[in-house]
Amino acid sequence: MAMNKKKLCRFGLAVFQIVFLSMMILPFLWLILGSFKNMRELSAIPVKIFPEVWSLDNFRQAFEEQPFARYIFNSVVVAALTTVLIIVVASMTAYSLARTKIKGKKLILILLLSVSLLPPVTLLNPLYYMLSNMKLLNSLIGLSLVLTVVELPTAVWFLTSFFQTVPIDMEESAMIDGAGILKTFTSIILPLIGPGIFTISIMTFINAWNNYIFPSVFNPLPKARTVTVALTLYSTETMVPWHLISAAAVVVTLPLVIVVLLLQKKIISGIMDGGVKG
Image (cartoon, rainbow, N blue to C red; front, side, top):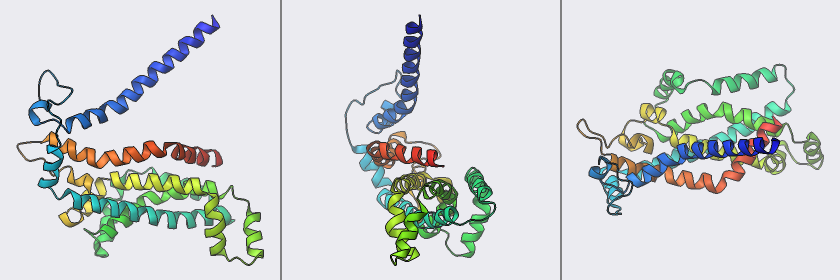
């Protein structure tokens, strides 16, 4: 009887996993298939799963109608710059919080986590005012600074838990040997929290790449647009060319999906380590 219950539980878990994975994978597979179809095939009833002719015309047309290569370049610059800023600022801030004995440290960490849970739309007005005064609207640097502000609380909170596990004896030994604070931090401490740095880097890059609301508000001009905003430009008042949008969306998402699949073990390991150590 106990064995039957165990098998039933395993079967139920397997069914749940299949349903859950299907809900995640099928939309992306449909997007890929749609990128090879024309409008007639996409709107056909009954639904056609596979295109009649496998062609790259949609991808070619998507790049011809919009300067999509430029938008991809902008997104890469913004995501990379945001990631670098996050790693530099968050690592130093988290290290200071982990090593400095101050009252209310736990409260500070709770506030950081609380700020990271705020809806992004609540930050639009103050950030727009700041960028406007700094003359950084429609600027890749300005957008990178905004995304850094948004991602920083989570990164600091996450990395602090890693720094707290590094024995302070290692730092003291390095300083006795003549190493300064900066050298100790960069040569000894940072390598020890490599999994945390790696995980935050990947998560920050993906979040910056996928962000839509801030680029759409702060960078509306063509010279500073990102790919998430560009995906909305194919639609007109009379037509939504889903075949072109699907092709462009595949170009935007497929590289990230491949990276996450290749590095998923390291990402999950970093998240689990941070959760356990925190």
